[in-house]
Structures are given as structure tokens and as C-alpha cells.
Length: 94
Image (tube, rainbow, N blue to C red; front, top):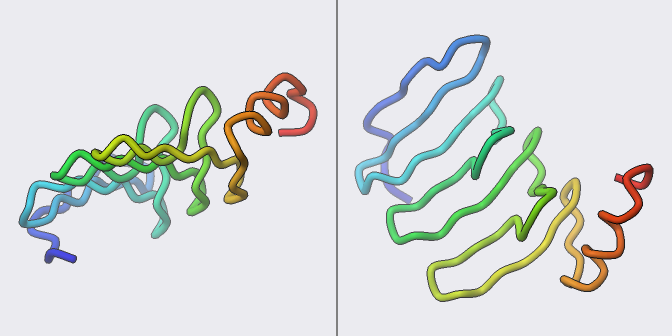
């Protein structure tokens, strides 16, 4: 991992940390967290969505790697794409 070279205060306990490679990490009160996009965006194109320090995304895969690999998570729990699509049809489960 690269060393963080810049920390930008986004207010209300949120920061954007940028490392030497240009990778970006959104942190809220010490945990990876972002509501409107991936909380980690690596310079190589990999992206991961986190919510309250758990890998999580509603609306698509929570892990998208530059090589095309994708995986689906809800509240830190990994699901197959088929399981994920079934679960998000039942909003009272999420």
C-alpha cells in the first residue's frame, strides 16, 4: 500500500485520503464509508463500495476490479449475482 500524501477534510467527520499513486479513499469517523459512490478508488481502476466499514452496495456490484471481476455484497456479506438480485427485490430484508 502507498503512503497517504493528502487528506482533505470534507466536513462532519468525513475525509478524502489520497495516496502517492493517486488512489482515493473516503473515510467517515475512521471507517471506510461513502453514500454516493465507491469509498475506495485505486489508481489501477479497482473500485470498492463501503458503508460504515462494511463492503456494501445497493444498485450494482460492490467490488469492481479493473480486470472485469465483480462481486456483490450487502452489509459485508457476499452473495452471488443471482442471490443479490433476489434480495434487493425485498427491501425489508436489506
